[in-house]
Amino acid sequence: MLDVPTLVEQARQGRPRAVARLISLVEGASPQLREVMATLAPFTGGAYVVGLTGSPGVGKSTSTSALVSAYRRAGKRVGVLAVDPSSPFSGGALLGDRVRMSEHAADPGVYIRSMATRGHLGGLAWAAPQAIRVLDAAGCEVILVETVGVGQSEVEIAAQADTSVVLLAPGMGDGIQAAKAGILEIGDVYVVNKADRDGADATARELNHMLGLGESRAPGDWRPPIVKTVAARGEGIDEVLEALEKHHAWMAEHGVLADRRRRRAAQEVEHIAVTALRERIGDLHGDRRLDALAERIVGGTLDPYTAADELVAGLTDGR
Ligand SMILES: Nc1nc2c(ncn2[C@@H]2O[C@H](COP(=O)(O)OP(=O)(O)O)[C@@H](O)[C@H]2O)c(=O)[nH]1
Ligand SMILES: [Mg+2]
Image 1 (cartoon, rainbow, N blue to C red):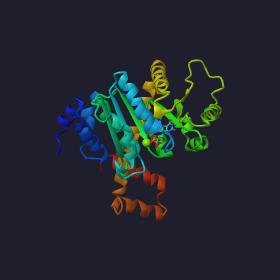
Image 2 (cartoon, rainbow, N blue to C red):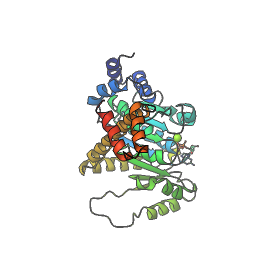
Image 3 (tube, protein in one colour):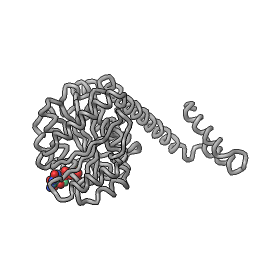
Image 4 (tube, rainbow, N blue to C red):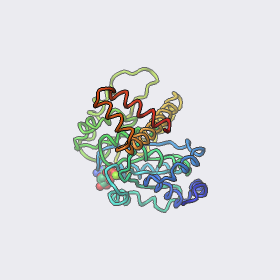
């Protein structure tokens, strides 16, 4: 067994190996996670979490790497979490990303980690916030979360961030794809990357139209900016950073930051509770209690809703 308090203390000093061990515990759904999270709790809440989503190849890793450089120039400690909902392993699928991030490998002010979820019950919605908490406690002031893959899981990860950046690129049929994946509803900042290619202006216009950004908003509302970038050359990255800082300040000023974090914490608790409950119910197969309830339903003396209530009450009473 690992000595959790020592490991957490080392992680707080920013020792990369301790941070890596802790994230591995999250990834592997270790039974020691309870102790880890309880020990970390007082040291969390300081990090600003930015999620980057968008179709594969749009330039998320390149933009992330450029943002890391920009934040480093501003003197901030940065954590990067690349989450792959589709892969059972961390590492392999992210090789290209590793190469793109390699310029930061020797910088002690940057912690980069890719993470898969190994298909455990809680899934990503469960794992990502815990890994973010590890980086937060390790002193990362900004945490960039890149989600690999598309679809619902991406939206799920975006929901873990304080600010969501949605990336598009010209000529990828992205507008339609994005709408399908529902990511047009989650962007706080939109980036049209690969602006060195034809069609970037058209993509930005289409996006502007789809988002209804031309419509008037209530004063004080956040109007998601659309920033054009050439991430591969670092162009427009300072503007992205500026947009992030503006959004951060706007959220803090309007109580949105605290709101989002509370809502996220509530969802996380709900997720853990439901997962625990589902595991316990799963353990009941062949159990006498469940059989007895089923018998009564078949016999017409009990309805399934009342039976479910009895089952849940029985489980949570610890009977
Ligand atoms: N032309 C062009 N290519 C880019 C730009 N940004 C990234 N790329 C390239 O697009 C490819 C995919 O980038 P990557 O960051 O891995 O995308 P991800 O899958 O969204 O993480 C790589 O070959 C990058 O070099 C850009 O601004 N312009
Ligand atoms: Mg990538």
